[in-house]
Length: 248
Image (cartoon, rainbow, N blue to C red; front, side, top):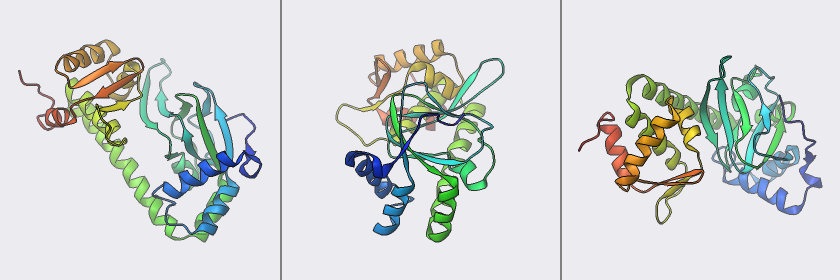
């Protein structure tokens, strides 16, 4: 299900929204090398939308008719079974784009996208975006690189589920999420719940909570409401390299 709100053209939006959109594009590794005229053109195509937490952006099987980027908040990419089981494939943060696979190949969406928090996004219609990419040939290589990054991410997740035990899976997931953020004094805060982490690594919330409390006692992490603060990334990396086997 595509977002049902009525996004408005960015030219009609407050200057701050247009400025935020331009900032996202200018700082994104795919679009940062575009000249000023091309960036302005892309901004004119973008539609702005504000979403409440839990709002559906699109569902698996929907037509891939739009590219999305996050201005603020977080978007969850997930899949679910007929029995109600869910798995989180990725969490898309401010400054990142999503929905590019179906936009590029013109086929159906491969997963669900949901507003994981209150968030702002912008939307570019495929009918405008594909001709734009064709007019900017250097973008093709940028998107190949992005798709390769997504594939490596997915391969890592599959490897973890098949080969690693719970501590290894959890440590790998926390490292991937912290690598998205710049280091900050006192640790790296990940705005993710234990339920969401459990859906990322394929284990129960109870098992996740037990393991996190063990690490909290070692001062590797600190647990906060709706967030996990990673205090010792090096210890988690060493655990992954040891195959998830924890020493005494």
